[in-house]
Length: 427
Ligand code: PLP
Image (cartoon, rainbow, N blue to C red; front, side):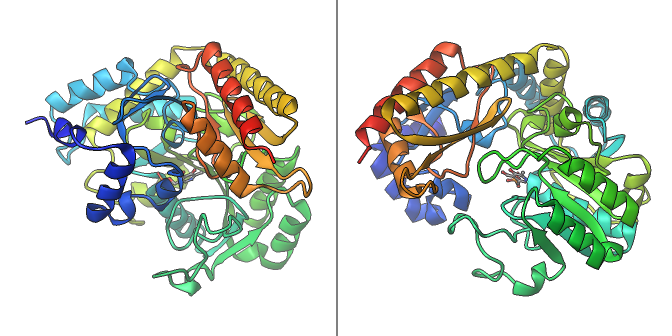
């Protein structure tokens, strides 16, 4: 029986989404995904940069599954290989040649990784990285930054200035003391960082950051800020951890560490790493991985590094390695998108904050009077765009992700739709 067709028969998006709530708590399997639904949409299929819903509507997508699909949905070069892997057995719980191949590609492309472990999600990989940092330093304290998102583990889920988009420590079911060892300062605030090191330098196990903040819009590091983190961590015997879940293989082949020339002690990768398949990796210099090499620190997982996930890594990274112009092309596409979006806002006489690094771009509606984020307006804008066949996330924190599947003509269509929607929702 065709299980997909069984579901396809019945409903409109709205009906199907309402029905889903009877069976799936909240209708979705990620709280953030629920906020991605301002007007119900239930997907039938996706290819390239387009999603088709169960009513047969086609939408150009710039959320792109929150970023993994750098070559677009259902890229045959990646999915073809993964499909082949399923016919060869995708999970044996034993070492496989693909472990060597996938790890070899990551270590070749990412400056800060000589040895690694694979995991299933960014959250898991970050949990393990924190444990590793603590094992290496014998210290517990972490320094993180406001607005940065490192998954939903209790220790790292501290930032809450996103108006309910993410929970506060102590929210339903969470232990408030879980973040007792997690310090936090504003991003790009050099003075605050200096102060933390003065007061706690000898107790810090790690500084953890997204080297380009991509979870409250796109906020690149100020010039010298990553270098400051690198210097202070070295001086105080703490580790520098780059959460490159978004930026890895995205802002440059070797991630933000290559783009900005700052190599962290530990790096976390996911998203583009597996081209859309659930896989993550964390690693660092040979010595930094010693607690795992000797099994002194614990990390495990039935599905960690399963053969299908690693085939996806191998296929994606082989394709990236074979495309020397990829990031120049994505930068050009991003620049085109930025220019067109800015022009659309100007013609409509409305204020969009546009920030971009390569193919990651945030587009946020601002209230003209206050100059502040206009959350409700942004949501209405999203709904007006969705009606016209363009999907981006209704929460302004979530950036747009462009891919090689987006053509300039797609970008022009998006900008045209945005312009109309800005005009429609004005006033
Ligand atoms: N780190 C960053 C920077 C992310 O953007 C995300 C997810 O969006 C995560 C970690 C968590 O990854 P996952 O959702 O795979 O657990």
